[in-house]
Image 1 (cartoon, helix red, strand yellow):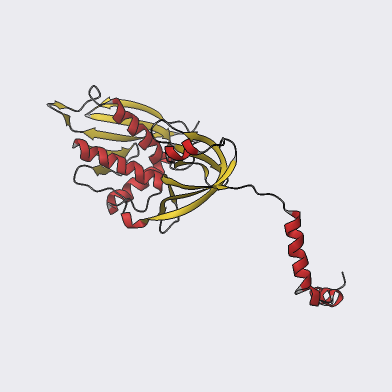
Image 2 (cartoon, rainbow, N blue to C red):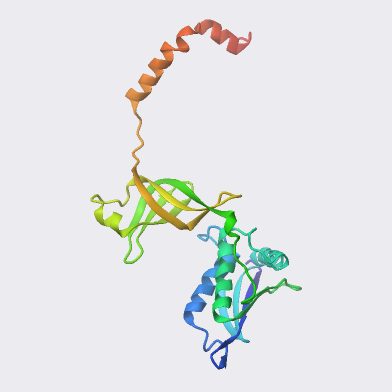
Length: 260
């Protein structure tokens, strides 16, 4: 069994006249921290990630997330660099958003958040209303994308989305106007389409922010082997440069005097 370690997210502050404690820490904030901790520990594909256990303790409120010691060691290095540079611009999208969400919580509720690990001489990053752990806007630029894949879901009660399974990006979710889905006559599910969308892209790494994708246009995409079209291309080639080539001389040149 892998050795385990943990990260601790300690939050201090008050709710009205009462100091913050596990008894008055709201469940919505707990749910948000669960997502953020997962993105800090495993920013990539989470399908086969190791287990993460959770417990909450007093003092004021300690959120403890236990998992593989290897991930704790890597996260400790990230915490140290974030603390030293007071910036999250170097982070991948998942951890960067996690820090932004924790920063929002600290600013909105006037909390102080400390993130440490179980390692000896752990690094620490502190987040409060005065810190500014947000990505630099200039790094994330508006861009236009074309995605091709199978539609696996479409709709939504308030915010409609189209889910597309692509080879390059996996499953992506694109915010789509309800008016488009209402007017589209055919069933989209399990059919392959191209979708033109806008979103944010990292100006240095090219990474796409999947939460920023907005639908522009649906493109009918039915790739097929078109023999008449390919035959026409071959015939045109024969009439042009291929028609001026002596096959025997061309083969000798390719062989460069060697026997086959």
